[in-house]
Length: 353
Image (cartoon, rainbow, N blue to C red):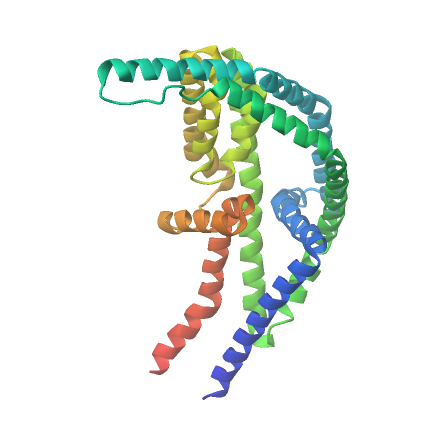
């Protein structure tokens, strides 16, 4: 075998060893890995905004302005949005028996209709008592929450520590992005370092545009759905807006799940409320897909629809919600790595043959 082939085999072996090392670290120091991963995504997300502000002010000032704005948004959420959300969630929980009663009436009506049109169908005598089921579920949830208050408090404190540490680390990433990129390039042979710099810049642009754009589009989508549903008199518009904003960040299936969840929330206010809320959610999702995404997120990540479907479902099956959200950009990252490393090697093999 040629020396070049041995070198490539060594690089592949080193890459496999690095992946195994990362897996070992993720098992033994999960909180530290979580802090670095969250910090990297924060830096990726605010990076495009910081780079635009750098044209008008020094980098430290741009970073400070971005993070002060984020802290202001968080403060508004804590002072205004969180109490209103908790109030609506409490009202939603208190109305569970009424929801169960309405659903029970729907079931009884459906059973009566089926029996009148299809007398040969044998339905259970007692049917499904959703009122008893709903009350039992609420009692179980409340009991579980009370019994695990200590664990919830510890997990909350740990979450705040991880979030605070990740924010501090993300500032460090942004302040030293050039040094980090050069450190990455220095891991390659001198003749490959320019390619490594282009690779780092392309990956940074990909993730930065996707994360920041997805956050902005999801926030606008949730906000519009909350406002419009509040205008038509929906009682839980804020909760619906939050659910929609989070769901829109999950490609392909997110909004479908949100629309299904919205149906029982709207049911006590009548069939027309169900229809109007579904129209609002579906219409806003299409506006976001066809208007906001092209304008805010720019060009696509370059993944075909079939690969996007596979990436979303495979990511969700392997890693849960984070996999659903990040499946498409990770697939785009793999495509970039293939283009930079594997494709030239395969082309060279055919050329030599």
